[in-house]
Image (cartoon, rainbow, N blue to C red; front, side, top):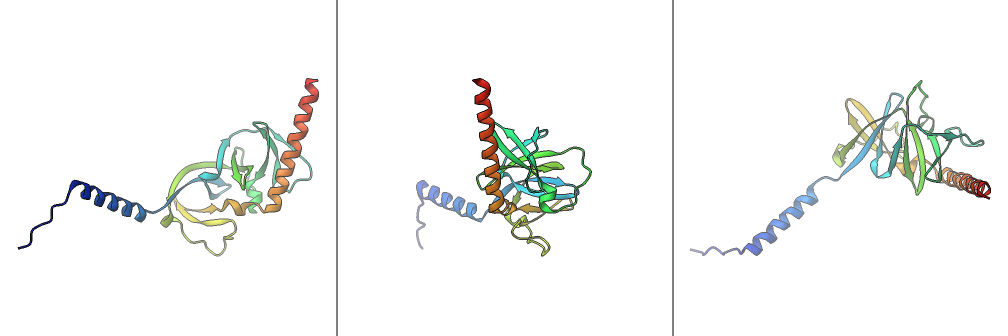
Amino acid sequence: MRKKKKISSKETLKRKKKKEKKAEGERSISRKVMIVRVNREYYGIPLDNVEEIKKQLKLVITPQLPEFVIGVVELRDLMIPVVDFAKLLGIQKGKEKKSSTIIVEISNQLVGLVVSEVVRIVEIREEEILPLPEIFPSRLFIGTYAYNSNLVGIIRMKGLLKGKQLRSFKEISDEISEKRRKGRKLDKE
């Protein structure tokens, strides 16, 4: 008969850690997504991109902006362009009386997105993200998610605005911020 090899507590601990690491690797990756409603459609915004949610903002209307840009808002001495999310996505605008503005970061630029409603924040596992139906442009969407019998398009934030639009937003924000700073300096003198 063979003698059983005695396993030290140190070896047992190593095996346990190895099993835990293996189990961690097998766990699915998940991401937190803010589900928003735009008219009757639902979209998911990755929570990593969300800075804050504002109910009421005092907009500054500025001329010569793209039609989906409502105006700009001053937030902590920054001028942030505010976008009508429905118009940006090409959705017919509803007759919503209430709305929320989500301040998001897209390629190091803060942008306000006006939505009908912030529904909730969910944690989605990778395997719950469904492939895109062909009608969804892959530039704009990561995938879809089934939520309460609704299909939620998960937004690819980098694809939401084109580079040229982001550059013009940054230029507008910088220009208005500079004018405001100069105006404040004149008021103080």
